[in-house]
Amino acid sequence: MSERSGLNCVICGVGGQGNVLASRLIAQVLLARDEHVKTAETIGMAQRGGSVASHVRGGHPQSPLVPKGCADCLIAFEPGEAVRCIDYLAPGGTIVVNTQAAQPPVAALQGIDYDGSEALAYLRALPGVQLVEVDGASICEQAGSSKVLNIALLAAAVKSGALGITREELEDAIRERVHPRFHEMNLRAIMLMSE
Image 1 (cartoon, rainbow, N blue to C red):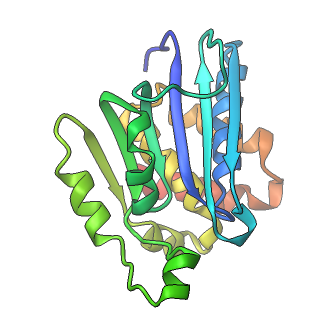
Image 2 (cartoon, rainbow, N blue to C red):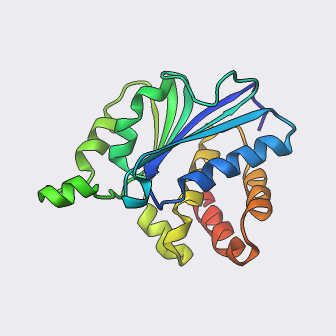
């Protein structure tokens, strides 16, 4: 896979899903290539299930935040968050989305039944977008932990070519940034997504 001149990626989800680690792993790959990289998080009430968006920019960005309409890849841990952050996606960009919804606190409080199906239908209807749907629940079950959702989504983005990084680079970043006791389950998630 050829190296790109720059990368603009937005990773969105809700607190506790591993969003920040996912951004750190992409940054680790770029740093290992001796590329300049900037990251930033916009976190609001994340500890209470609120929205989290991480920005990763490689190349020579002036700002750590991806401008709207410039993201090569949008990685969404949840369908509704993908729709919320869709303005960041560049024309012809790639969306990697977990098909399992995470019910936001406001929906639970108001008794609203949210399953993400309307958000997925919206994403599927977008023209000129590469949509990669990931059954996160199934991958997590097969890998033996719900904590590998972030790695599964990263592996799907790698497989799609949207990040311009290889599976081996992602695996190396995990070995570098993740505690050794979690290596096996995370590498298994990558293997499952690569099949």
